[in-house]
Structure formats: C-alpha cells, structure tokens
Image (cartoon, rainbow, N blue to C red):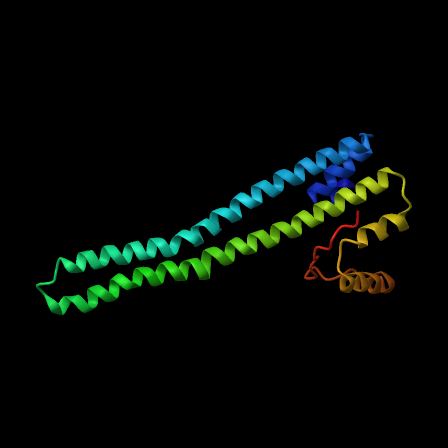
Length: 178
C-alpha cells in the first residue's frame, strides 16, 4: 500500500502512475519537484557557505576595531598587551567559525542534498520504466546503474540471502548513461 512507502517523492510518483497520469506528465511533475528541492537545498547550503566566507572578514574587522580602541589607551602601556590579545581573538574566532562550523556544515548540506537528489532521480527513472511497461528485470537493471559496483554486489548478496542492506550504506552518484 502507498501508506507503507516512507519516501514521499516515490509515493507521489506511484500515486500519479496509479491514477493513470500520462508518463510525460509524471516525469515533468517529478522533475519539477526535484528542481525545486535542489533550489531549496542550494539556498540553505549557500547561506552557510557565505557565512563561512564572511566570518574571517568580520574577525579581522573586530581585530581592527580592538586595535583602534587600544590606541586610545596608549598612555597606559600596561593595558596594551591584554588589549592586543583580545583584539586578535576576534580574528581567531572568525577564522575558526568559518573553518570549523560554517563551511563544513554547508558542505555537509550539499552532500546530503546530492544524495537525496540521486534518490529522486532513481524514482523518476523507475516510475518511467514501469510506465513504459518494462519488465521487472529491466527496471532493476536500469536502476542499478545509479549505484556503485560495491553497493550493487551488496544488494545482490542481500537479495540472495533474503536480507536487506544496512541503512548505513550510502548511495553514491554514478554517471547516468544516456
């Protein structure tokens, strides 16, 4: 039943197919959904990557402001050391936040998005093949092209042993044959 499918994108494709929607329309709708998903994910990742690009600049700005403030206290040489140290902490915070937080998070979001997009591409291909009346073996073989040879071997082993693959297995993008 459709309620048992946990992937909403797949549910939409199968529901449209079951409703008798024309194959071209199903493909068009699913590709539009995929495009919009990509746009949303790219926007989120780009915010973090932009923050990663700006954080060091803000850190340097904080350092300059701290040094200017320190220059106002030149009559007290004993306070210059701590003032300089705290001023340079701003640069450290800016560079560290960029390279430890913002850029890695942005790149992780991009990687997760690519994985989700690949799943959607597999669904589009599978639904299209089913609607064309391809045999289950042909559908399975065409979808295997999307995964790495290593994962293909694991899928074959698990199918032969009657087990499912681990959820930790990753789907790695492969070039789609035209």
